Length: 592
Image (cartoon, rainbow, N blue to C red; front, side, top):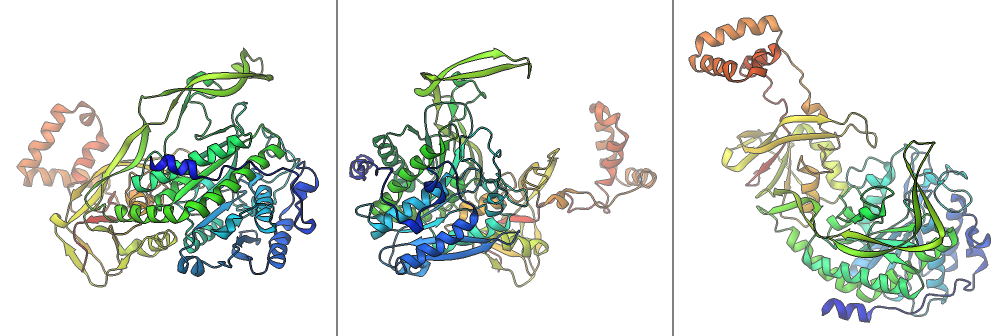
């Protein structure tokens, strides 16, 4: 009932006429060319300044960073009551809606739609402007260096604009894989912006690829399938309101990412599950806020895509003004749940159940015919013949990887404290420095030793990713001065778990940041091991019995000379006891 009331209360007025009056200086190059083209970044720099000059008490431009190629990262803050700083927003308990365009700079709808929406919120075109009740932070272009790698052929499966930017940064990094690992300087600056403003709703504006179909926009929110119930229901209601508004404006929205289970085969259906925190919506939901991925469809003309994005922004801002205070209260309750995870099972990854719902998906007639070019079947769409595709949609999920949160927190060994602390600070994860040398007993400490380590055969996002197998086991170890203690009793506990649990999909281990730990650095020559082994067998009858039993029962071991020698080396005092030991420990009591 609560959700239904929210849906009925939502602003569902018809969308604005596309040819709304314009203010000459604040008109974009896209508008001037009837959306055949988009402007360069110099236009962004000019417009953010002009908005501030035109509305000096209602708009503030902020530079929040610098790209590797030396360009400024700009954002525009807008509010009709002058709430233009993070401190003002916090002191007035004012909801904040932050959205960015151009994280993939060839997908630039958000930039032109955002400037248009901003102008209409300020010049009175939008009646009952949401800027009366919410503060908006708009980042026109996130990937600025990619935006200025400008050309006409960068998105061959996208209709317009005539020329556009490039998908990745000047360092060839994909920013929408970087939220948790935060390698890119642009991402580090953006995370600071997010932490400063703490928007209750963050929308990341994209253009999707894929098959040809009629749907023009997809909105994918988290937490809607998983996460604290307190915030999940609010996020689901927000999506329902947005869908209703978009439909009333003549759009054909969906609330899932429209990618088929089997590429180019609609009958295979669609599976929708929560995104890991390398992605925008997954990351912001991890922070107990609402994250929204927006994907217009690449085969719709640019003007139509900008209009769809514009109409969604109108609705999201209005919802933030209307419901933002309730969202913030729900986020506070979600934070309390996160701060009480000690000793509880926590799902780090999810998978779809076998349950599905049959849906009508608006596509086109198509044929699958043999291709003399590729030698496989080729999909040919006929856009003159709309067709309804019956397909299964799988949206119910269940935990795939669960871990038990530590009872007190994590200890990061002093050798890694400096660089790990910098990562934790970027995400707002609280930690303390250990001052004195101390040792915890096995009852209060667990360590993780990798039993198998697999590195990716090729790099991904500039890193050799790593998959480890192993388990946490009780062990006593010293905690040297300078180590970090990361308490689990904090609102950001889910972020700490995703960073520090070695099996998590976006952990520091998975992204290869601890690869040196899994490299053997010292050895024993074979001829030395031969001598040592004989001495060990003579001294230790139990070891002799163990070795002989293994020879008799394990044919692969018996046939492997290296394995037989390693049997003795691993039991010798010279063996590196830190080899494959993850230098972050789980503790049941805080270090003193």
